[in-house]
Length: 401
Image (cartoon, rainbow, N blue to C red; front, side, top):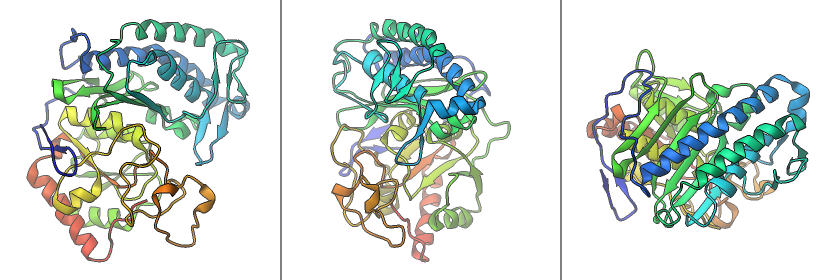
């Protein structure tokens, strides 16, 4: 259920749905009405299926051949890897699958890249695509274009799409393909995720989840935990903040190491952990749009942390195209390497409150609280919030970046 509130949409607790381990069947009807969110999810799933062989070919080459890796990737300014596959995949989704003014806006993680797959040799920015990939790129693009023709010309004009072509680019480049996801999220005119898909293209079999809460639609193939871990708390591969560490300790819960935002969201649906909490940044709106839509469709929740701490409200990030950060709160966010527009303005030797004009438009700078479908009952969320408030009162408040 979704209810409006003074500070944004709120997600109310709902019962979790029973799922068969490693389910391979869809959990909703496949004959989606034309122009529905389900139809949009289904064509997105078909597009993910279409690009999967191409991604696999790039992955096999990049992750096993050091010289090819040097030729096919460069380091971005924010210390993540950018691969040829990343750029080409986003181009196929943004400039072909979703093209034609069918959406209000399309926002992609790699929007600054220049892609040429129209004339040979192909290029991604200054990187020339090896000739051996040209045929599979051509074949994949033809499939994506055919799918584009099935998307309604008018039904989604209020929708803003967020595209993360390869979430877990570093994992992709380092041979950890089972942590990689394609994330596609669709958001209403207020910026609330209303439909999405998370798709792991490099697992065997492919695993994925899709959903649109307002239509009661959810579908997927999930790699369920052999033993569910409802008290597991996902932590990143970076430094865990005192607020997070002390909260987990206060609850007596267990830490679950994890990689990549989309993969973490999938792990919540698969019972591999019960919670994903962040105060520090390092993630962006393309990391939350599709995942939030899917998690909510399955009965879980994903929301900003400050409102949850204040009064238990579950308030979404604002997923809209913008030149400024729509969720920024003056005085509440510290400047960091991950949120600064100009990296040189960040001084790691001191804590500096960020100004709106210093912060990237699409970074998530209000933390995150996400819970699996089994953990959204009112009492369970209240217990989590109570522990957080105690930890903050004891001198370990959240540190928002």
